[in-house]
Image 1 (cartoon, rainbow, N blue to C red):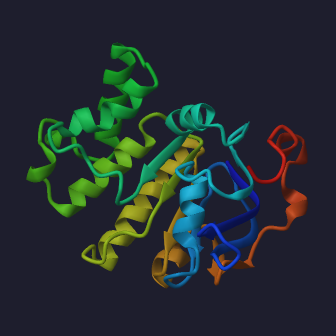
Image 2 (cartoon, rainbow, N blue to C red):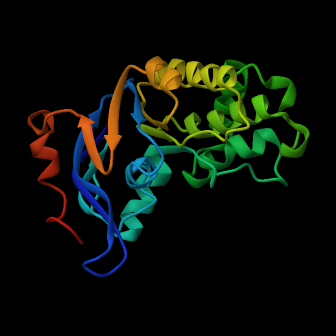
Length: 240
């Protein structure tokens, strides 16, 4: 589950700084795939980075699973490793690792035993029909298989949340829809909340729901009344 409340994000230190997000609220439930939809410059990447625990420089509150994020570096890193999966341009595959080793990486960060790692990797390779690529390196993969490996790595540790940034333009629409179909299936099976940023209406329509973002505001959003106040109370006061 992902929740965010009154998120404000500015770029720049002074009063003339641009506002990327202007007090946005929302919630993505377990097993729900939600499109963060809007044009370029709407604030999608800013919100995705905050919900993916990659950016702590904001005002507001974020909850991942049962964890209210306190913005302290060590705690944020712990929850990010344990409870968040990323499918984003900055999280490319390690070129010197095999497919299996790339998928294994989040499990190593979370100190999962060798036996359990092997079982989880074998299961994920089978789920995504990429067993025959287990010993391949990224340079040997086409774009479709690369995307499947990125998906496998994001879901391998059964995270509470997965964030998906807009796929590169070189990825065709049919490949995008196929990718999202796989993500939705894993989200449903594992009970993972998925937030997918996109400006593609076909991709957005395929999700369970849209959060329409425009000029830093959410046009369609979940009312604040559904946010779990008891969990939010555990977080730090507003801002940093």
